[in-house]
Length: 560
Image 1 (tube, helix red, strand yellow):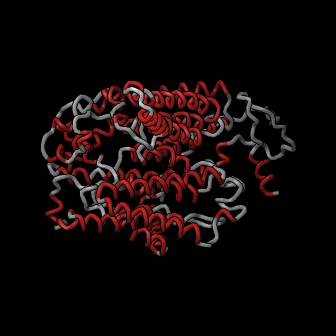
Image 2 (cartoon, rainbow, N blue to C red):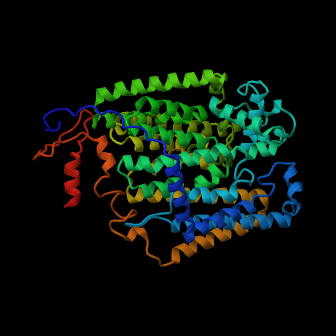
Image 3 (cartoon, helix red, strand yellow):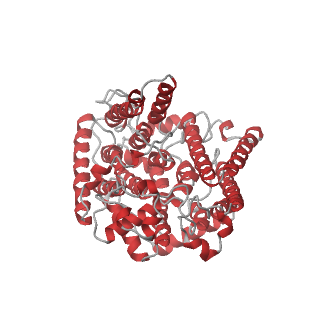
């Protein structure tokens, strides 16, 4: 226990920000002008414009696509046109990645303003769904709901016509696995747009854009609240090309889930415990995996109120927060009128074999080996489901450690790792799945190795998406795209430019991020220690972990 005389007093929730619309618009306008004055931001706009121009091929458009005739894009559907489009798109992706890396904040510097994402998104507004055909399924599922059918019992096959025609055949017969809020949002978009199937799919980008706006608002403020450099949060979480390509470009439900999860964490960091649990329930209404972030919401809320988190209060808080979360989710489910039918459909995404998933990849390699040595088919079918089961059991063990050990001490990191490890241990991974926890990870203190890993994963998944699109368009274009990617990588290796990792106190230096004195906002989450305290004895808390020294002691250590 700390030798401070008495337990810290319970804090009241911080007041919610007051809406100052004229002042907010002036600040946003100033940030837009600041961003436009930056050459690298303008370079990023050119990159997304190239991506948009290269997307008008059969790799992204439905078949048939009336927009092809309307806009006179028939040439892009020929072999030569597909080749040219793929080269343009690949150039755009590589240019965006290179721009993002050059915007990396180094010691004492800043990245581009958070509103830069909106400027980069402008060329993508009218392009078809990028690197995934899920938006076409969203439109068909929205029509299913609009016609009064149960989307958890039937799929796009029940709405024959243009909406069903543009759905990937893989999902043509499958019912929806998404939460009730996601399906009602899809119904709303379809109802507003009317009977144009392609326009309805493209308009699924509107909720994704709103979600990115929420992330751009909440993530830097969450970083401030927990003592992390907000430039890290903006660069790695808001301006990340993976988010641009798959949240803005791909229009996935995951964008709404991540946005509400980040907002719930921000509310918890300000002491609004009930509101944060309700916001997380809303996130779960879009994608059920958000429920795992409850450990972070509870941990943040309790650290704000009490400063430290002891074992018994934490368990009580976890039970209380989970109860509020479940009540709010049930209320939302009843309001939508769709029920809990999604539970029986959770296995739908896992019906494909994803080699990005480590358990599935290992199982597939073992299956291939058994095939080579001539074992019967019954034996070959064992490794994949076995490894997938081992992956889920491994996650259960990790989840227990995150919940009862890490969450009381590092709530944001615990929530981020819960979402990331669930993805890595699960049977299927799509590139945008890594954004579940990756966006939250941007608001945590990371050492150099972890930060570099986050960058490399983002680069790999973006290039994987680019090469996958090239493969769908044209084999020769795939070769050109791969050679362009290799050339860019080699150019980056031989280029002799100062790296942020060479700055000893920099954001990529040997020390973790934000090693200086904590921001004033973080002191609101710690117990107040009398200034007259001369000496402090640091012991262990009820979890058996070393207690952190008080804020004043940490600040004095940082100054010396």
